[in-house]
Length: 73
Image 1 (tube, one colour):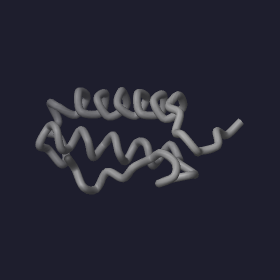
Image 2: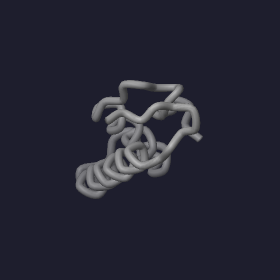
Image 3: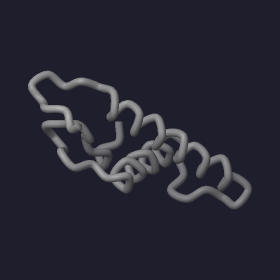
Image 4: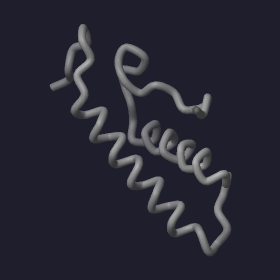
């Protein structure tokens, strides 16, 4: 897929920020859409996709269980 998207789960990443999640979502949307930056008439759809993917990514990271990794909490 896109080599600039890094793995955001333990043990590859311990302290994942909202910025990390959003950056991954942005790279994903860029790859899928083929646009580095959307044209003005596509900006709303592009930005909405980034936010939806960031939310889904955060939810995934909050709920997956990695064997051998300690859960924060």
